[in-house]
Image (cartoon, one colour):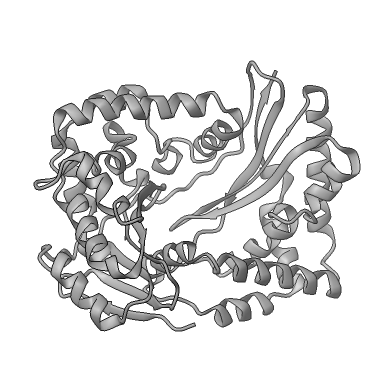
Amino acid sequence: MSFHHHQLKNGIRIVHKKTSGAVAHCGLIIKGGSRNESDKEQGLAHFIEHVIFKGTSKRKAYHILSRMEDVGGELNAFTTKEETCIYSSFLPEYYNRALELLSDITFSSIFPKKELEKEKIVVLDEINYYKDNPSELIFDEFEEQVFSNHALGKNILGTPQHIQSFNKTMIEKFIQKNYLTNEIIISSVGNISMNKLIKTIENHFAHLPKSNLKRDEEPFSNYLKKEVEIKRNGFQAHCMLGVEAYGINHPKKTAMILLNNILGGPGMNSRLNLAIREKYGFTYSIESNYTPYSDTGIFSIYLASDNDKINKSIKLTKKELVKFCQKPLGTLQLKKAKQQLIGQIAIGQESEVNLMLAIGKSMLLYNKVDTFESVKNKIEAINSNQLLEVANEVFNLDNLSCLIYKV
């Protein structure tokens, strides 16, 4: 699988995978998310993701929404702790239409006051939706607990008080400070030649002024274990266990990904699923997750069960963690685990929109895209002693934080 790269004179980087598929995908991956907000801006990166669709110097909201949908395409966006992504899926003959629109809404939005006030109501409803869903809310509150008093702990959606304070000036200042050409990737997967893609992008993005700014992000340090129990109305208890983990450039990151996949990844044969759901029937939902950020990361386990079974489920979960710390995986176990992860990655890349987002983020973080063979080789190179070492560093029960919603 070959990827093409190019950099515009203003610093914007392009990564493209030419395919023969009937659908193309193209997006902007911008290094600016909730981590880049000041205290008074909490939730602003996500709010901007909403309001860029509300009008530009030449389009009203309706025309923005209709521009791609009129030709069967889609337009979407999302915000993370460290990135904002605005992207479109469409028939390949509409590359010019899609790129012109992406440029227009990202850099020529006018943020009408009436539309801002309406969208505040929408975002407040979104916040309330999460508050009504403990299985969603607990992830955000646990990150706030782990990354206490740090920008990474901020809820991406913000708070009602912050949302109500946002105005056009705040939005424009945030964009000016964070939507920097040297930290923007245009990622594409579709049936178009690289030369034609470059020309099309230049038509719509080359006018943007060059930026060489490098923002100083405060690194996270001083993780402290915390155990919190909260009473909530509902039918089930919910629990998060976890700890600070490795960042994106850590040499043990790949081993951590493999270890997490064995423990509680998407496979029904994960250790946690077999040991707690299948053996005892204590829980319908149990999983583990590992999210690396630029300088740190988080490992977590989520489970839900009846109130009278939550403590037993936690005890069994910790028992599985201890097993990983005490004994290395056998040769056959390790081989199967590697094959499973490699297969999951290959299947994930079958989704070309996921591929477009993945290669864009890779270019943003590493200024390169690893081929599938390269990723496969990294996984194959992991040995059982490395996994044992990672388990003892990350799965140490003495360091695990805990958040429980009890009913």
